[in-house]
Image (cartoon, rainbow over all chains, first blue to last red; front, side, top):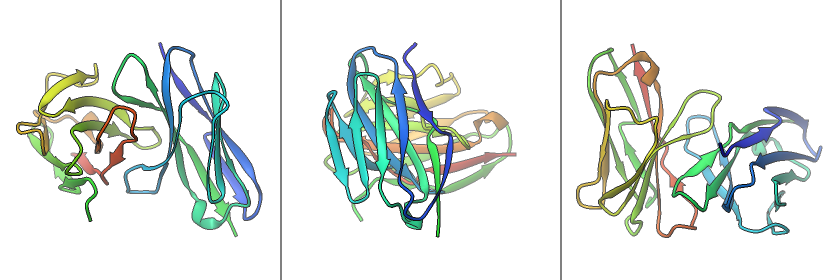
Length: 110
Length: 113
């Protein structure tokens, strides 16, 4: 069965300490990979879409990359306001839905 | 604000009661999705509409769940005979074309006592 796995489940960083979040997926007709940010009590907020291996997208302190089996969300010099849950979702060629991982809960401390 | 709107934001109900949630998508979006999210988990897909047609349903969508989008605009999700396991955040999302990102509302949090 197609799966989306995110790691780590939780990550604590000090302000300015760069790191990466991982999203791996079973190779089975990937149509697109999406990254979302979710704050407590809110719906997911769209960050990036990646469609093919080698593609990269950047927005402020975030950079998303895609290989044939996984995606990384790099956070450079994070700030406390970057604290949130980061969700990865995959759309397969065979369906309409986005299939989400469980997310990585990021806490950035001053 | 022209984002996805969901109503109510919170619902507390007793086990066995029926509940209905409403979703108003972004006006030009013809694709509408319902998801369910429990604490510490990612959103789980429930169902998908393209205009008024329900094109995909998850195995999670038991017979007690029904969704409609009668005129291809707003949608409702009804849960009959609620159970404690139905307690979750119910999220609605919309998009305009297949490869475009989903835009989510802030959800309806259901608590079944």
